[in-house]
Image: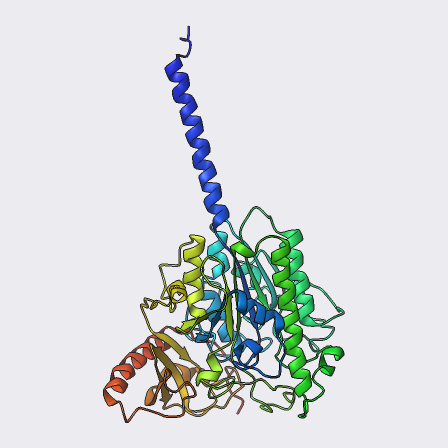
Length: 483
């Protein structure tokens, strides 16, 4: 016969149940308190294209408001001066050339973000996050094909994406794919359609009990540009061909950002959502190709444009609103980079960054308190088809060193062609330029001869990093050149 429970045993059982419930409740609270992430990436936006970054012409009231509520990141960098490489670096926290995304990816090209790479959404899914990609993908050439990994293979639960640009233009695109199924012809402008999908996922599709990571990638203001007539008419004083179209395009994208941030407000998600707005690279070089006559982006005070390794190619207008860490109207001028996003997000989400591979970024939260970021490696960029002679760059504190290589001048815009891999894997850095960005953000004065000791120190670091990344980058098999 079983002995009846005593008061002491009953009380101990009661305490155990209460304690377990408290622990479970604490775990839930901690999980709920982890932030959501909304990363908004636009395409080819110039450093001088937003009113809050100094534009006197383009109207961007919603982004200006986001900046007033959060922080301007005035020394924020993309991971490359060209689109596919920039996106691959952001998702992995690794230099694009290290992972083999050396340039933009044309449709059908073998180059892609390989399946063995580890992305932010993959890491966050392991700790209970829901993930969504909406808009431009551009991390493979064989889009929506089993021949290469798709957004879903890289950790996105839901995706509504295009391989590259909205086609035939931003207006009434026909080339979106939702979770593997072509959507077909649509009515409206790309940024509005992207915002519609993002908001629907936030409000109707996701599990509201779980935190989320949403990557919203606007096609604007990349060519081929199309803009609402009413917005174009707001810029009637524009004098150059295509100027009003471009300005209206940025304003239309700004409206879409406003709809996204309003959705966060309506869903009461604002206070616990990390919102980062940034660009994949600098503004398109006007008339680089015949169809680019609508590209009127401004580099502001910076040197260069898209495809340059000078500042305007990689330093991009960026805004961060994260109420627990940013102050309204704050300006952060410490150097941060999209390479830093993976370790920063992992720290906030209590996820573990990959330990079996080199990362090129670091947690940047210290910069929001005007503290120095503890970097295990300096910020670094490489682009073998850059406009201008520098093919590699490195920033340490206020110093930026750029290196020229002994390989051929291949010219911009060609992606990776037959014969290019030999140069990518064997060319060496041989000449260098040096700039103090605190004194000369426009990079007008090369200080290489004036500061030989500083040059020598940074040159050794740049060459070592270049050699390391060059050695790790994979070789793509491309058709041989036709004789």
